[in-house]
Image (tube, rainbow, N blue to C red; front, side, top):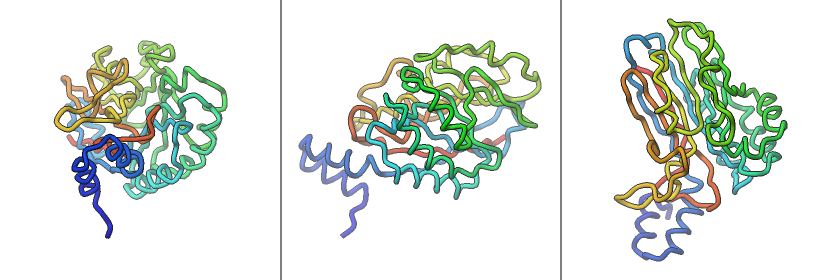
Length: 270
């Protein structure tokens, strides 16, 4: 008999032992892939983004219990969605830069209409090696570090990690048109409080893993520095939005609980 995810969770809670919960989190939920769909409302000044469809994925930590099959399924799911852009929000590795190679073997199969953009996470910067950017570029991922890329109707800005790097938003925004909305990628979500430029329509972040291990009726048990105020989901402040993905990999503990790996599909609606 094939058990649903809900049945597995019910059995773990029923037996009530840490072993049962860890077994579910490491064997079942860690390999479960959620494709979540979120509509992002637009302020009138950002109307040029209406209809744009973006896939957001990050926090692979591919040397920390990475799963090539899970990444392959995620890539296939994104391609089936027919997105315009893919945005990768960092932490491709935990410590070993060489883990980027098998990860990029899967990422190179992404097929968005306009391209794949990525930023660096704190772990990528703490253990930086040229193999990271080289492998990602060869896989078709444009890495932006305090840089921008312009498209006909909008601009994309990618920030360096606030924790592990040297983020500089004024430099990244320099010389961008005043009349184009900006999509901002910044690994750490609490940086949402560090800007108020009215051109910024959406910030995309990761870093928190959504908590990775969550408690019923409580939520995330432990959140990282610069990821405690905005742990997961869509947030609004004036004309700007923030979306925080719970990521796809695991760090330190090879398990997820009430916080499955995620591919997030965002669609702008005016």
